[in-house]
Image (cartoon, rainbow, N blue to C red; front, side):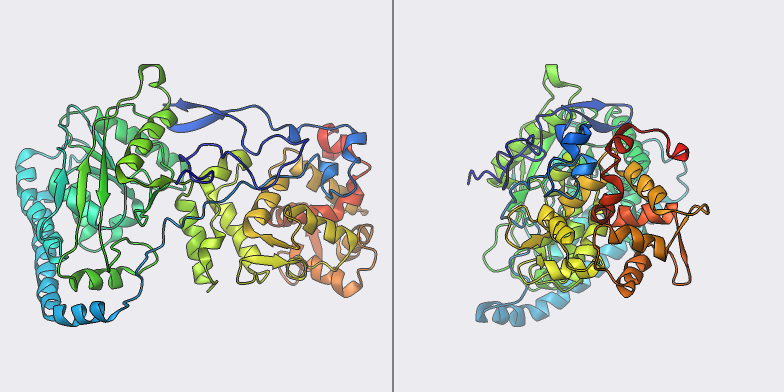
Length: 562
């Protein structure tokens, strides 16, 4: 299973699908340092030479590259994993045996449902009692309140029993709080948090959205949960600070973290977030497995209600929990959370006998958006965000916006877009320049583009240091008047330099992309730049305005002086 595209998370790939003799590798070798105050990784890497400033002669040397004026070379696309780590392999009930078993277990399922409801109610009431009047929640929970929480912990075990986990196979022993204050585990289902609540009663790191869950939100608060908003830098920084604080005090329980940040199908280990590893405390990894023949218990592309129903209608659900040996950061790498996470991930992948991929929660969001659009095989739209995010500096929100744009191009069943769909969404007509822009994306020269190619090409242009200056400079050249606005006629005159055959109706269509409302007759500079940020490849059609000004793009005077 040692394929080139299956590797440790966050490491550079061994190969790419395309290469060029004059461009650097897509992901240069990196050394990562950890800012313990900020709680985030910083990349200290050689500069991407393709983004260096170029001389005017160099910039105009490749007439086939519509973005050469900006100093953007072509790009290569890293190979993609063939594994979908989020796919549940039994989303539907199939086979006579499964249907017969479900019918036979229906009376048992009703009893289990009643047991589940009673256990949840008793646990909730015990938790409310334990939390009543407790105001000093920054400090560890008093012992007498912890004793009350044993009622909730016993209720959690009853809930596991109701889901068909009458017995759970354990290997190894949980380390003491003093030896390993932080516990990390792979995340396959909603079952693991229930199990660890019963087993360890830890402090857990969880998404802020869990606080609003009925009944469950109250029980989570009793665990002195560390909430985190994964899209907020300040929230992530605060979460790391809280992990450090609680891990450093033996009066708190273990800190439990699922470093993958989302559930998988258990057949792969995806990239780790670094929050568990930045504090530098010894960690006990835990490997959780769900052996099965007919029913995949992973919480993937299956609804919660359906997953619960399937669990209720099984004779028994198998679960194995293996406590692995402690892992400590090496003395010469105590400040490097990346290597600590790499060691832990390798140990867990080895114990689980699975591969590691560069997927992340961002890929889950791309997968969900594609599924909501009713696309066939939505996993085609995953890009392994942990692999491309560092070199291209593209975040999940930007990737989702580009996916929206790509889906509107009407991709075929293979997830690819042809030239006509691409031009229709960008409001362009077929022309030599438009075909060059499409060819810039189509690195495989197949006549079709994938979402990954579209995303990388767009970010290659948008993230170039001179992109905004080029946009503002294009605006200043298109604006022939003195009102600091661009009219439809001025935009048409500028675009016709690149695409001479555009008629007034086609110009009006393109102009509508830049407007903020249908009634606008003018485009402000902010609207102009904002549209090009949403559609960075459109900068290519304004290149005739900029081809004679390469030095101004890269190091010219302030725009207000032009």
